[in-house]
Amino acid sequence: MVKLYKPENEEELLFIKSILESENIPYFVHNDHFGSLWVGPQIDLYNTKTIMVDKESYERARELLAAFLGCIKEETEATKPKYSVFEKIRMLCEVLIFSWFIPGKKKKG
Image 1 (cartoon, rainbow, N blue to C red):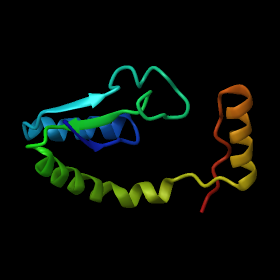
Image 2: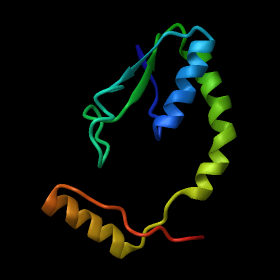
Image 3: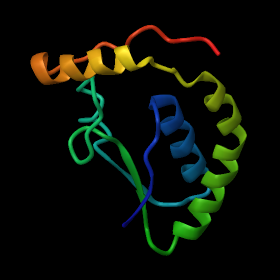
């Protein structure tokens, strides 16, 4: 199996799964159930969900995914949070000292 995509959230994962199922493309979601148990930073191979497809179906799945992501990319770019330098340093200190983090206030604009 070949890595296709790492979804940003559960809703995006569900849409992609339904697209692949409707086209009868076999797929596997690495950390599908385990990854949703842990909150906090997403770490590859630990709790990040990754959609995998067969090599034979990769090109078709990539085309479908590109069409889907092209529709939602503009919306997500406008809603990405922007953190100040202070908030980034605070989050880094929380991770290093307490092994957790709480995102700061989102700036508008």
